[in-house]
Image 1 (cartoon, rainbow, N blue to C red):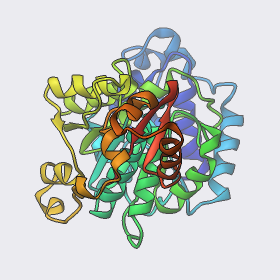
Image 2 (cartoon, rainbow, N blue to C red):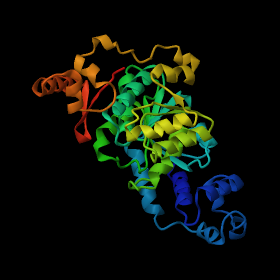
Image 3 (tube, rainbow, N blue to C red):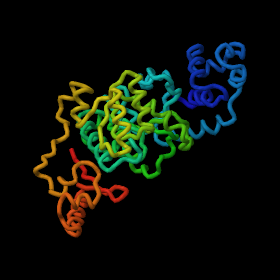
Image 4 (cartoon, rainbow, N blue to C red):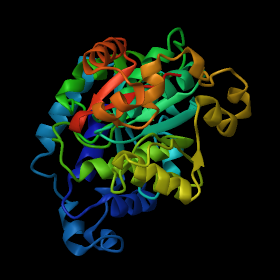
Amino acid sequence: MDRGELGDWLRLTLTPGVGPQSARRLLAAFGLPAEIYQQSVTALQQLVAPSAARALQTEPAELADQLALSWSWLREAPDARGIVPLGDARYPHSLLDIEDPPLMLYLAGRIDLPLDTCKSLAIVGSRNPTPQGALNARQFAQSLAGAGLTIVSGLALGIDGAAHEGALAGHVGSAHRLATVAVVGTGLDRVYPKSHHALAHRICEHGLIVSEYPLGTPPLAANFPRRNRLIAGLSQATLVVEAALQSGSLITARLAAEQGKEVFAIPGSIHATQSRGCHALIREGAKLVESAQDVLEEFSPEVGSRNAGAAVVDETLLDSVEQAMGLDPVSLDTLQARTGLDIASLQARLMTLELGGHVARLPGGLLQRLVRA
C-alpha cells in the first residue's frame, strides 16, 4: 500500500457519520475509497445519511496528522509492520465471516506469515486467575503450541498473558508458523498493560499483534469487549480456562459458538468464583476438557494424533502434605487437622513446597496445591 492509498482508507475511517457498516456499503457500491470520494452528494445519499454524504466531500481535519503518524510507523520497520485494508489479499478470510469485520487491520510482528494458514485456538479467561488457573493456561498453551496450533488471545493480564507465554515456550523450533496472535484494544504504537511490554516484544518476534484501532488509540474500556469478536473470528475453536459469570471471556465463547465453532472449558473448584463461568459454559454445551489431548482430539484428528496430553499425576508420589491438601483451596487449620503435624513442621513443609512451585498462597490465608501437566 502506498501513502496515497493509505490516506484514502484513513479518510474513510475518520469521516464523521461513516461507521463500519456504512463504509462497507459504500465500498460494495463504488469500489476502493478513492472512487467513493469522486461520487456526488446525491449518489452518496443513497447509501448514507445526508450529513455523512456531505462530510465525504472534504478531508477530515485530523487526516494529515494520522496519515503522517501511520506512514512513519510503517517505514520504521517495513518488514515487521503492516496495515491491511478490507479486500486486500492479505486480509484474513476468517474475519470476512464475522458480523462486523474491521475496515483496516494493523499488524506488528511476523507479517510474512499469513494468519489464514494457521490452525488456531483462542485461549481466554480471567484477568485475576487462581494460581492453578494461570498454570493451566500456560501448560495447555505450551502443549497445544507444541502440537502445531497457533494460540490466539488478548494480551491482557492473567490467563491471556499466561497463554501467550505458554505458546512461546511450546513454539521452539517452529519458524514457519505463528506461535501466538495477540488481539489488542489499543493502537499498536502502545502496549497495554505496560507490564506486558517485554511479552509484546517476544510475541512480535515469533507471532503477531493485531489491532483494528488507529495508532494513538488509548486503552478505552469499550474497545476490549469489541476486540473479542476478532479473537473468536481468527480462531477455529475457543478454550476458556477460568472465567467469572460476568467475564468478557464468555463474550468470546458466545461469539465463537455463534460462528459455529467449538467451545471448550476447563472445570474448576465449586468454591472458586473464577470457575463459575466455565461451569455455566459446560452446562450450555461447551466440551469439558481435562487435558490438552482432549482439545486436540476434538479440534483436529490430524493434530490430535500427536502426543500432547497432560500427564496423569501419580498420587502415590505426592508429598503427604500435598495429598492432604486435595485440589480445593484449604486453610492452614484444616490442613493441620488433616495431617496431624504441629504448626512449625507444617509451615516448614509448606515453605518448601511453595518454593518448589507445588503450592500457592491465596487471598484470605488459603493454600492450594498446583497440579502440573
